[in-house]
Length: 247
Image (cartoon, rainbow, N blue to C red):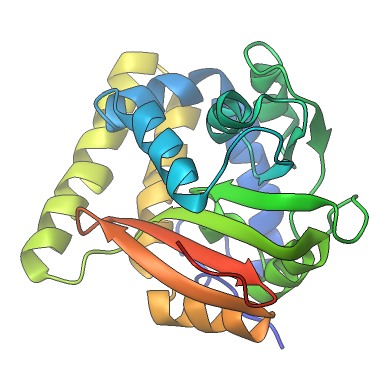
């Protein structure tokens, strides 16, 4: 059983087999500009939101956390602040992103993919993934690995931008994320690679599988699962291993 987060997207690559190389190259080249883009896109509120989402998950001192697709370490940084840092690891396939993360994040960083985690079974209390679900090749493969490395009662938190359900919301999101953000990115960074990343960012949001499909994949992978929605656009998928209580 497998489930891609979205179909092949024309204008970026021609076949599904080309997607991973395309995505890796995009993130490697845009990495120096990624934190700036995130600050602008969230109007500077991203760090607070990430910390609050981790608090809602139940993160606290002493817990061990794996941040998958850590990128420049934006989620891992907040997780370390909440837990004390000694048990937090960041993981990402992009060498460029990890190079940026090492400048600001004081946690161990590993270059690997979420669907092939280099960690022992039942290693972590929690696992986080920030805005990268759309970039994995197979949701089931990733979720099975997340379930494997979590301890009984452990939780997974997946933060995503979801396509708004209303016509007005979709129109506004498309205007902002498809038109305005790529333009601001090109002007502000001078980088065609950064602009291309943001073009791809919206295209994956618009073509992503429905939230119900993501929840179903989590459940089929062994999690109890629920979804919280913030502002009609931000999704928090929470999965709990072996029947622990959802917050």
